[in-house]
Length: 329
Image (cartoon, rainbow, N blue to C red):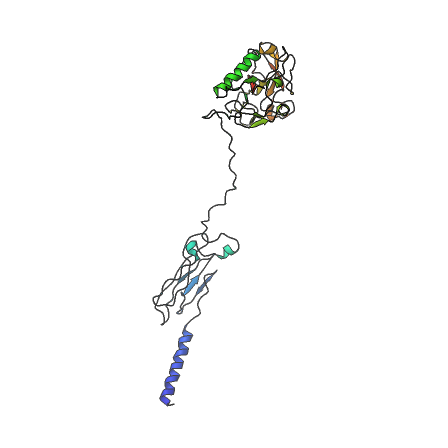
């Protein structure tokens, strides 16, 4: 080999070593912290990342690559294009789209249990509990349930003179007819002294349904031990009776005329002379089964037999001369 050729090969080897040593290692993909490279690189000269974002902006590329830069951002919980490295093709095209197109690359915090990329982030999910919805009055645009065979009278009486059992029955029939249930035979739940009449014998054997179609009791025997309940012992329009329950309007009107014991038998001498007089005393039950201060003491809970009332004025003590109406046997 000639000295000229040896000199040429040595020169080429020197140039190759110099070219290799001039390149620098590519920075790591975006992670916590920042890496800077002042030399030429095929990957963007600086790279930074925090929580799954990556960016690169660039140092110039070497002689094999035209100058270009690549940048991209992608973060957990927001939409963006994923950061990527520059391609070493001519023209320095931008980095490939990352998973961030669907909402950003998954960050380190995601791996630790944070929200995944693409999650809009929103607030905590609802606990799934909706405010309780109470059935509205059937009188507000609808008829009572076709099952209705019991209600508390919506009208009132200032005294215990109801026109006897006949007058009380007619009252129930009239109220039922007004709401489309006049095809049934209705009876007032009242006992009488003469002739001896027990209220429980004047009504059908059940099951008993109120105007909202809710069952009050399965049969006569189950009905009588029942406590009053403002959501069950309601009028023919679906309205609750003013009582001791939370939020009740005034005046107090939960005393319902019965003249009966808790078993539905005659309570002798407490029928306002068979519901024809304004003298003497009656016996009443509590539609809501509650006493003062929402007391549930045993004396206040019976729906049909709680305490005495006045025949001359049904208001004192918390009444309004209302009665219970049932479909007859």
